[in-house]
Amino acid sequence: MKKGHIYTLLFMVALTGVLVFALAFAYEGLKPGIAGHARLRERRAVLDSLGLAQGLSDGEVDEAFERLVKPGELNGHEVYVYEEGGQTLGYAVPITGPGLWGSISGYLGVKGDLSGLLGLVFTSQNETPGLGGRIEEPQYKEQFRGVPVSAGSPLSYGDHGDYRVDAVTGATQTSKAVLSMVNRALDAVIFDKEAN
Amino acid sequence: MADKAGKIINRQLFTENQVLRQVLGICSSLAVTNTMSNSLVMGLGLSFVTALSSMTLSAMRSIIPHRVRMLAQTLVIAVYVILVDLFLKAFLPEISKTLGPYVGLIITNCIIMGRAEAYAQKNPPLPALIDGFFSGLGYTGVLLMVALIREVLGFGTVFGMNVNFAGFETWTIMLMPPAAFFIIGSFIWLLGARAAKKAAKTAK
Image (cartoon, rainbow over all chains, first blue to last red):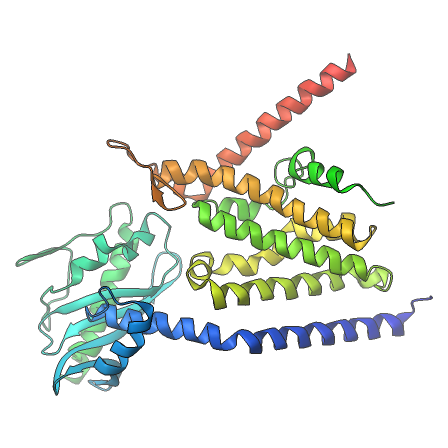
C-alpha cells in the first residue's frame, strides 16, 4: 500500500484518538481510588499535626477526622479547627514554603489558646533523601510537639524551657527553610501581625 | 526472521545488558537507586512499559508510516507510562509518593525508545514483547545491584529492614546520585575489562 501524506495524517489522528480514548477510560475507572488515597493522606496529616493520629488505622482516620476536625478560620485564614465538647482545642494551619530543592508543604498544629505547638507534619517535600529528607522522620518532627510559642518571638533551634528543638545535621538549608515556614505561619496566620 | 526466546533473554540480561553494555537508561539508574524498593518498582514499571509498547508497536509496524514512526512510538510509550502512573497512584500510593516524578520520567528512558527503534519495528509482536520485557529486567537487575550497595552503606537497611550493626556509621555519599555514578562506572569497567580479555584471547 502506498503511504501518502493523507494516509500519514489520518494515521496520526486515528492513533491519537484511540489512545486518548483508552487513557480517559482507564482514568475514569481508577479515579475514585486515587482520590480516596489522596484524601486519606491529607486527613491523616491534619490529625497528625494536632497530635491525634497516633495508632489510627486507615479506616479510623476518616471517622476521627469527621468527629474532631472542621474546616474553619483563624484570623481570616482557612485552617482546620479541632473541637471537642464545644471547646476549641487546636488549629491545623496549612504551611508551605521553598525548601532546598523544591517547595515543602505540610500542616502546623497549634494549641487552641495559641500558647504552643501541637505538631508539625509534612505532606510533600523533595529534599535530599537521607539528609534534608529526614525532616519527615519522627526524630525531627516530633520535637515540635508542645514547644511554647508567643507573638513577637520567632521560633529558633535550641532550648525552649523544658523543650529542645534541634536542626538536622548535614541539612542546614532544609532545617532553616522549615523554621522560616513555621515562623511565617506564626506571624501571618496565628498571631496575625499585620492586623495589630 | 524471529529470534529464539532463550537467545533474546540471554542477550538482554547479560551479553547486551542495556545499562552496562549499551549504557542506556543511566539517568534513572543514578536517581532511584538509593533504596531497593524504589529500584524494584521502577524496574518493573519500565519492564512493563517496554514490553507492552514494543509489542504494540511491532503489531502495528506494517501500518505505521515510516516518516512518523517516532511520533507513533512516543505516543504509545506515553500512554503506557501514564497507565503505570495511574495504577501506582490507585493501588500503591506509598510507592507512588516516594517515586514521585520518576514514574513520569520512565517516558524519557532511552531503553524503551531504543528497543522500539532497534527491535520492535523489524520483528513480530511476540519476540518484541520478550525482548522488551527482558531488556527491562536486565535494567532492573543492575538497578537492584547498585541499590543493594547504596542502601546497605547509606541507610544500613535492605528493603527497609535493618541490617545495621553496632558501630557502623552510614555513608552519606551513598545516598546521593554521584555514588551510583561511581558504582555503575565500576560495573561497566569490570565488564569491559572482561570483554577485552576475551577478545584478546580469541584474537590469538
